[in-house]
Image 1 (tube, rainbow, N blue to C red):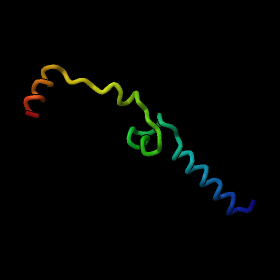
Image 2 (image 1 turned 90 degrees about the vertical axis):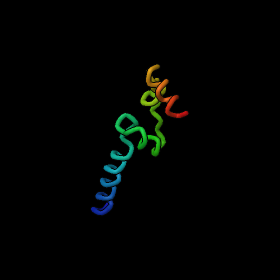
Image 3 (image 1 turned 180 degrees about the vertical axis):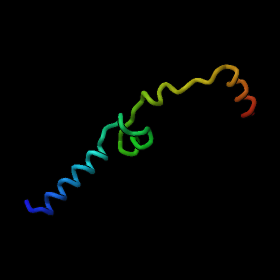
Image 4 (image 1 turned 30 degrees about the vertical axis):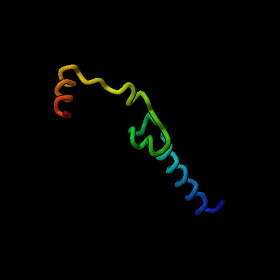
Length: 61
């Protein structure tokens, strides 16, 4: 392997480390883009307190 091939292999390894760091290192949207879904970050969907739910329903009407 010549010097150019060795440099290219090193660059590929560095890129893979950045791109495939795993879902725990990604934000939710970036993870979705790369095919990772971390359900703990969005499920269960947050509940709105009863007082705010009434205000929200009134606003939407």
